[in-house]
Image (cartoon, rainbow, N blue to C red; front, side):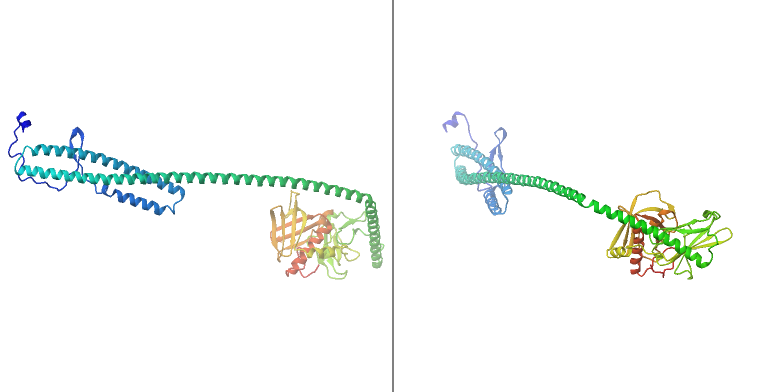
Length: 490
């Protein structure tokens, strides 16, 4: 009281009301703000569950640890560490707030102690009750601080655990990465060794192949040398003998034809009648027949009309050969075994020429065709002379495929014509032309398309015609030339 009298301070009687009432049984939370002002802090219900949040996060991490990959686990641990750091910061803030609360409670208690000495009666009792409440609040605050300290220790422990787990995860990731790099390097080394082994094997194989080829070439050259030493003379002798026999046979055949013609003239009794024209050439398949004038009084053939016929005998009905109107005619397989006639219409008379006998087959052609029939398809090299009646400028080589079901003409990958055997298809020898008529064929795949094809030899030409007719006959189709009788067999 002496202190109060010195400062001349008198407290009014009604400074503290007798009916003082506290709204809450606990002291409110305050913190010192700017300019040392006391600000009330509203409690957040979420902050009170910090321990539950830490326990829940820990349980979730432990539950997912078994099914997470190393990389995902490291990521989760890092997130947990960040959460723990955040919780540690919040605990530090709460500790600072608690410290501020202790200071505030101490100041309040000092003020109440000072006030208790100035009041009396019921007001003093109220002040003492307030002091008791402040002390109880201080006890509660101390308990809460103990809980916060325990929570802080747990948070630090969790943070250290998460940090250690994160470091372990990073270490595992680094170990796995190093192991993967080692495996990749080992795989690359193995691949390189395999490549080197393959290259070495290829080099050795190539060298062995080259060596084998060189040895084979040497053996072939040696065989050719031995063959040239022993066989050429014999082969050349046989070729000369064959050529001499062919020449003698042609001369005797020509002489025999001449005798047959003279005999026919003698039988007719027209020996004294002059003969204006005659037929020259071997009367066999693979050759050609030519009409030539044998008298100076014979008209020029260019001014005469010529028509060739075929018949089984001289007295039989003649069959006109359509398109055979030239002085040269090359017999085809239909003509084998038949007599050919040529009628020449001069200015005022008709001259008939007849072969001395039926056309003979080509030697060995039948066996050759029978060998080709056994194949599924046979190829012939040809040159297109005419296409649809127009001369073909290109002289490139084409291939004629004669198969069991169709005929195809192509050049490389380009197909000129391809048709199955049908009644509209025609094939025969070229009826007219020059010396090459014996090697040419007329082929009509279908109506509106026709070709004149030149073969490599007379043998190939006649074999192609016979082979196509044989395959068509197997399909119940008779192949012939223009205006030929389809019932005639070859």
